[in-house]
Amino acid sequence: MIKVENLNFSYKENEKVIDNVSFDINKGEFISILGHNGSGKSTLAKLLVGLLKADSGDIYIDNQRLTEKNVDEIRKKIGIVFQNPDNQFVGVTVLDDIAFGMENRKFPRDTMFQMVDRYAKLVRMEKFLNYNPENLSGGEKQRVAIAGVLAINPDIIIFDEATSMLDPKGVKEVNEIVWQLKREKTIIAITHNLNETIYSDRILVMNKGKIILNGRPENVFREKELLQNCKLDIIESMKLLNLIEKNGKLAMKQEIEEFLWELTFQK
Image (cartoon, rainbow, N blue to C red):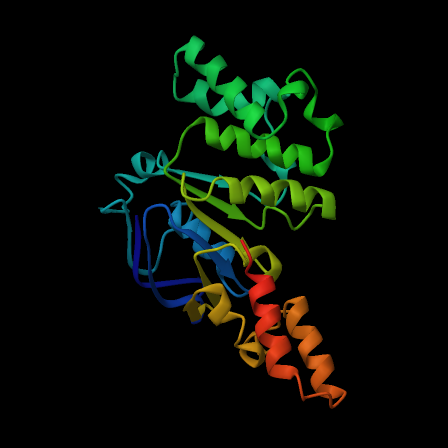
């Protein structure tokens, strides 16, 4: 679904933000792009949707090479949910906001209202259709933003730090919807929080504009030192193991480790 080859990008001369990045994403995969602030992950998202133009390298979306000529056509295949839901609101009501993208694409009116109802129910916001978005919580706003993206039916959805400004309740609400979409859409979740990547098919770890790890969560999470060197926190089970090791209680360490791995990735 997505193929990136030897991608390079700089905001300033000789300061690469994206440094010779290459990867593939298959249709229906749920990929997390993990990295600390400044690692290049959000810049990569903007390159994928054509908001920025690469200095060199190629991006293919559904076998089409992204160019200035076809960027508008390719954008129809990609929806993006940003960090701050307030930046995505344009309507006076929740209903207006979910319908906005469909109005721009000239959906038939009957179809539009059917889609609003369908996706408002999916994100559990059907009772809020006449609310002013300003009166919603952060998690509710982000759920409306997700419904608006889903309504235009893109093949790919990018969640760009979509939970970073939310409280724990909002994070849980949004992540439940993201996980619910697994297999229905090709999903890219950009985050710095390892706990949000557990249900991914694969994780790409970025540092200083490069992809330094690309693998299944259970394999990536074992690279404790590398993750910490990238200024990324480790998951709670690994913190417990480190505590056990520091206290010298090593007799059952391997047994505990295997149990915690199984528990962490229990679906």
